[in-house]
Amino acid sequence: MDRAELTTEQVLKRDIPWETYMSTKLITGTCLQLLRRYDNRTESQRAALLDDDGPAYVRVFVNILRDISKEETVEYVLALIDEFLTANPKRARIFHDKSLGEDTYEPFLRLLWKGNWFIQEKSCKILSLIVSVRPNVQNGMTPNGESSYSKSKSTSIDDVLKGLVEWLCSQLKNPSHPNRSVPTAINCLATLLRELSVRSSFVQADGVKLLIPLISPASTQQSIQLLYETCLCVWLLSYYDAAVDYLATTRVMPRLVEVVKGSTKEKVVRVVVLTFRNMLPKGAFAAQMIDLGLPQIVQNLKVQAWSDEDLLDALNQLEGGLKENIKRLSSFEKYKQEVLLGHLDWSPMHKDPGFWRENITNFEENDFQILHVLMTILDASSDPTALAVACYDISQFIQYHPAGRIVVSNLKAKERVMKLMNHENTEVRKNALLCVQRLFLGTKYASLLQS
View (cartoon, rainbow, N blue to C red):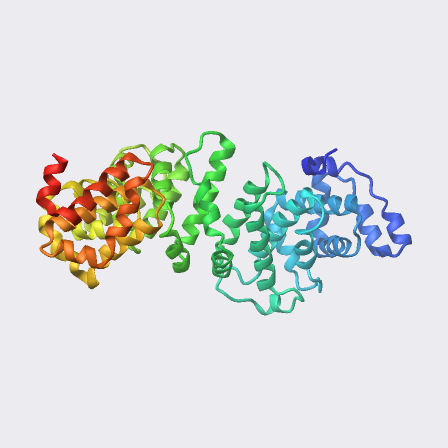
């Protein structure tokens, strides 16, 4: 059988020759006795043994993973551990019992990079759960530090968390398994990102960008769960400023808006709305939310029959915050945020003569910063809409500012815009031509040619 498709149930049907391991001194006589008592028992019998002598069994399992390399045996022990942790995740605390005296992290961390997919997947799942319940973790959240107990281990918690993040990012980039790598990685991240140090490592590993493509409306049960856990990761990252700064450079907001518009699953809507609430006061997110029509979407969501009071409270808070931002953000501030983010589109203000008349002097701020950014968009953007809008806005500046032609000429716009007159996109060519005409002929003649 393909080991990538093994199940825990299949692996647990094996007969492992424990006596042979004792004769070769890979396990002790005491270890053999414990294994005989535990092996091939019912789930309730095993549960009773773990309740009575859990640390002894964990010591046996960890020692086997450390000392025995035979793949079938490693798979079997990982399946035993996975079975009792799946039945009762609180048993992961046994791995932190002070009587163990073992490095309970190292075998699982090493196995992440060795062996087949079954070994990697189970090692990741088990290790993520173990570290998430270590003694210094309170209510699922932990400060960026270690308890004295975790420091006594030969493998530090920092090394473990960094190793986990590295492996999880590698699975998101280059999956070992075509169907299970990404869901496994996201599931573990949704647990681990509760910790500040993991958020830091994840950002440093350039992992945030790997989440963005996974944020899209879902229909099947499996895809909905993956979407929920991905959005949960983004929500956890929204508490970390460095992650928020990176998210501000991505298309995360339009994707989240599409998800919340199309989702009927309450848990998905809740975690996205909570993310919006967190991000509303940060950076340019408020302007983006307003431009994407989130105020109306929130109103639509409020009239639906949600049972979760946290969701209803979050919707009310989000609605209030959006209303305050609509009052605060003038049309020019919204325009400025659009340009600075490089997300130019044909929003109404671009072709509104009143906008240009009322705000033309604002373009002089910070030594014509907005014009400098428009020039950068002409140089660097591959988006035809952004290029067309940038050309149009420069032509509007020439038309409405008293020294428009001089300012734009000094910024060497002519060369940049002329290159776009041969662009493959008709809209880009049209607006580049208008801009060049206004540069050469002035607004009066350019307008006559356009009419």
